[in-house]
Each structure stands twice: as C-alpha cells, then as structure tokens.
Image (cartoon, rainbow, N blue to C red; front, side, top):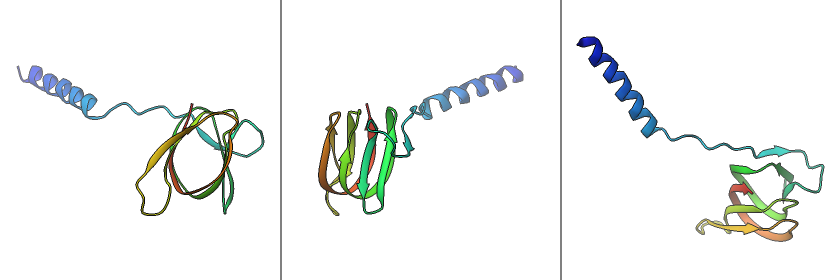
Length: 110
C-alpha cells in the first residue's frame, strides 16, 4: 500500500507540473549579419540590427529611426515615446520607413 501511495504521489506531482509549466514556444528568429535584402533590418544610433527566420523574440532596442522589413511580414510591440503605453503594429513585406520609436520590446516575423 505504501508503494502504491508513493507512486500515486509521483504521478500526481508530475501531472501538476505539466499543468503549471506551459510548453515553451519555439522561436526560430535570430540575429544575423546584415548581408542580404530579405532580412528585417532595424537602424538606430548604434547601427543596423538584422533578424532572419520566422518566430517571436523579446528584445530591447532603443531609438529606432528606420526599418526595412525585407521579405518578412513583421509585427512589432513597441513604446512610441518615453512614458507612453506600449502598442503594436504589423508591417508588410518590402516596406521601408523612417520613424521615431523609443523602444521595440518584441518582434514577430511571420
């Protein structure tokens, strides 16, 4: 009986962990060098930052003043100006834009 209760406790604990710990989302997005027109390219005072592949990435990129989406549909979560609430927007493929963003907090490449 003791052995049965021990096994039952282990199974119950494993089941509880499966409920409490959600599966992590796969993220294939990665930083890359900026060689190529199809890449997502963000520019700030530090230079260009480029990303490739579909996925989601939390980031902290400040002072973005230009974007080039390349061959990517991209959703950004960002803070437009210091002190303002975060918002999000989606930009289609092959889009270039001059802008002024305080901080990008998440990038989703479709």
